[in-house]
Image 1 (cartoon, helix red, strand yellow):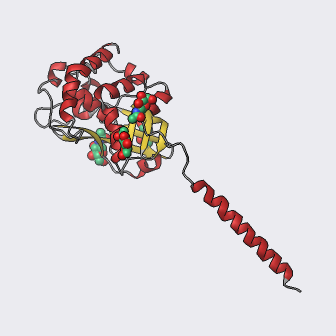
Image 2 (cartoon, helix red, strand yellow; image 1 turned 180 degrees about the horizontal axis):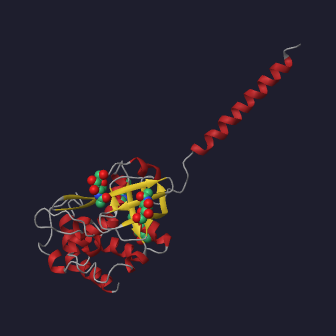
Image 3 (tube, helix red, strand yellow; image 1 turned 90 degrees about the horizontal axis):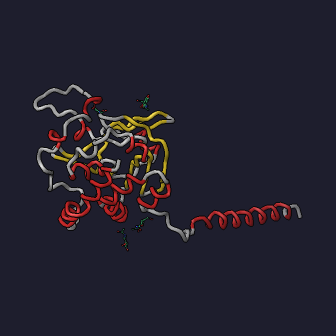
Length: 248
Ligand SMILES: *[C@@H]1O[C@H](CO)[C@@H](O)[C@H](O)[C@H]1NC(C)=O
Ligand SMILES: *[C@@H]1O[C@H](CO)[C@@H](O)[C@H](O)[C@H]1NC(C)=O
Ligand SMILES: *[C@@H]1O[C@H](CO)[C@@H](O)[C@H](O)[C@H]1NC(C)=O
Ligand SMILES: *[C@@H]1O[C@H](CO)[C@@H](O)[C@H](O)[C@H]1NC(C)=O
């Protein structure tokens, strides 16, 4: 009976294999708690994003984000400036913007796809944001090393300092500066004069910025509630945002 030890080993191995597949199969079962794809909930948990949360709510971009997450195969990425970042803005920076520009500023912090930190390394510049204006989609640039990811708008450069969510479909990263879009805060040469002047750019007088009321037909929300969005914004929410901004 020379084969019995081998048979025993075989049976033992088979038993282990069965146990192995069982233990492997178990984690596949769906967990009872779904991950929160709720931008405000994620930010509220972070504790230092109260200004950004208020701007998201008052521009109703939070609802736009949550419903986009429901319908998007690409996911979304949000750059969340801390309260310190807003406090560090030159006084009056946000007040110098039209209401539409303030919405674009919020949308500029949202990318229309999910980026893990690793994906940033392979992306090519410029990167589209959810904001747009007369000259099309507002973009930003991403540069990476092995341990750092920088965001450059052409007006400000700032690194990602923290990951608040990296679960598909919603990535949320903390930044220490408000991302000021070049299309709003960059120099506006009347002809061709592409000399970059980042330091003086935020000093432009409000009158230079608020020429032309807004671009109404842009695609920030492709749903049919765009009209009521605008109306509510201007009649109610706009005042709220102006109040928030005035307290900054
Ligand atoms: C998202 O979270 C906020 C804050 O926790 C909550 O007030 C809101 O109802 C949530 N929205 C959705 C769609 O779950
Ligand atoms: C997401 O989709 C589900 C099912 O289609 C729906 O019940 C829910 O209200 C949606 N949530 C949002 C925030 O749109
Ligand atoms: C990020 O920006 C800082 C400051 O401008 C710079 O020192 C650093 O080299 C940049 N890193 C990357 C990865 O671009
Ligand atoms: C962004 O990247 C593009 C392509 O590399 C480059 O042409 C552009 O000057 C960059 N802009 C900024 C603000 O870094």
